[in-house]
Amino acid sequence: MKKTSIVLLLLVAIIFGACKKEIVQEANKKQLRTMNGTLMTMPTVQNGILTFKDEEQFKAYMALLQEQVSSSDQETDDVLMSIEEQVGFSNSYRQIKADAFDAQNAIGWNKPSEIPDEPFTKVEQSIMNQYKEYKIGDNIYKRMSSQFDIIILGENVTKAEEILAGSRLLQEGNGTISISQIRALDWSKKHLVINDISINGWEITPTIGEDPQPLAQWELSGLVHSMNECGGQLNKAVIRSMVLINTINPYTPLSAYYDVDYGDGSAGYTNYHATGGMFGIELYDEHQYPAAGTYTLTIKARATSNGQIVVTKSYQVTVVGGNLCSNASKTKTYWHEIDATHAIRCKLTYNKRRHWLQGKCADGLGEVTYFVKEGSSWKNKKATALGLSLFSYGYKNDVVPCTLYGATPEQSIWLNNVDDANINRKSCDAGLLRTIQLKWITIEGLFKVTIGSHTHEKRFIMSVCD
Image (cartoon, rainbow, N blue to C red; front, side, top):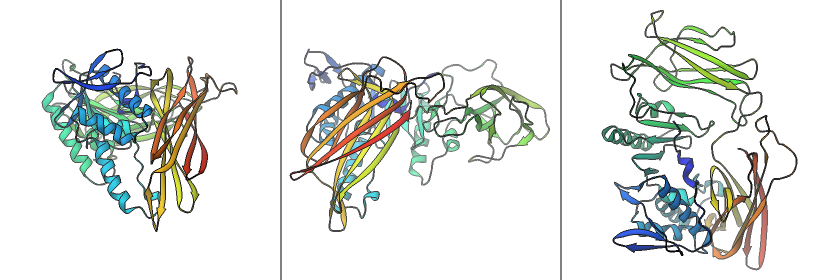
């Protein structure tokens, strides 16, 4: 079942035009009023989580935030803080990170590489609480780590609260959060969706409100997927986080024994004892196929060595002879040192799930931040002016993934943002006019900073496989 991932944060299905918006209070409800008089009820805050009644309200609110930021000559944090205050959202992730940044910025950093660079845009941070959570309908969307997003399904309130509490405890611990630790929150896979945003956006998808009748005592729970992400190896597949579940006990993962047939005539495995993963009981294996194609991979599991096979499951896996594109968003950060005491941090972000802005399909964002070295410390300071122009273009989707078709950019257009005076950070969208499906997307940014009477420019380019 298709699920909304947190990387949906900038998806917008509504084109708002260029009219100015304001938040008003009517009948004790916080609402958004446009110039034509349209009203939209604002999200509420429930148990410290910004809550949207449905996808439509979520998309409209995200569009509001982005357009307010893009059209204002104020600092981004100031614009978003004003909206958060009117909504009554006092514990946004954005505010917490901004306060921490400002406190350290007063002291400074020894070198630019120590200055924190959040993976989320300011708009994304503005809807998340301190645990990086927000809610749409009954479901809670949460960024667990730089690799994993989760969706906690709210159909079973008690189970959802249990998973939410467990996920927060995981975040409080030190070290990397593994797929095994997240899966242990709900081995049944009925109340939790896990998205790995680093590998093709695959997900563990539960079945909502539907238990097989009669319920099988044994189930295989895990993933089989290709490893052909951009920059990955060709014709390769992986069995990942596979465990045998005893549903009667209830949903207890066992240290099992497996037969694996990769469907290509290779030897595979017989009675293989799985001892991998966080809990030492998970089957993990990578397999190199001889050629591109679709193969049927079959796994049989035993509860004991050479015992009776209790469950058999087959998976269709497709591997290709060229790089398969990743669905994950991508960000690249570049430092440009103007001289020994002045520098700008230039960031380009591509978003798989785009939004519309001023009639253009916005593929991503750019941001420029100004830093000055005072004594031995680097600090974020206000420049005389900051400017940013973004240019995005792409090439048609060929029959072979990630292969350029032709040599001419398609319907490319500059998005220019007027230089703003006396600010320390500036962002704008990268736009593209198109009606065709594209494969490679290139975002080109022209970053400008004016210091006194001198303007310095630097151009950076990022290409991604869409």
